[in-house]
Amino acid sequence: MAEHIERKPFKAGDIVQHFKHERYPADSPMYTYRILGYATHSETRETLVLYEALYDMNSEDTLKVFARPLDMFMSKVDKEKYPDIRQEYRFELLSRG
Image (cartoon, rainbow, N blue to C red):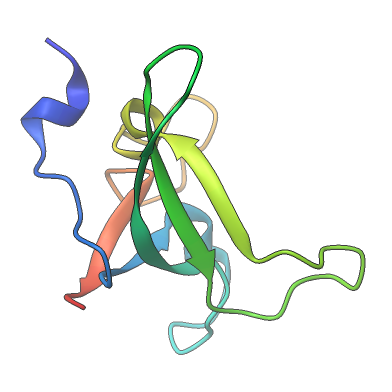
């Protein structure tokens, strides 16, 4: 069973936090995103999550919209790679849109 089926996907407008946000003060916007919606990859038919950064990007990053496969978006944090991270999932809900 795919992992994303175990968790209810986010809705457009939801605000989520990537686990790397833990490295910043709680009130920092770093690694916070707004869910824009979903798309289907035209070649693989894979579902992609479309999301927008809610923080200022580096000067070389002009686009603030990203796409990531749904399974990856909804996956758990790799605790072997990031043992000090408390957040369970790669992205978690901060507020409903």
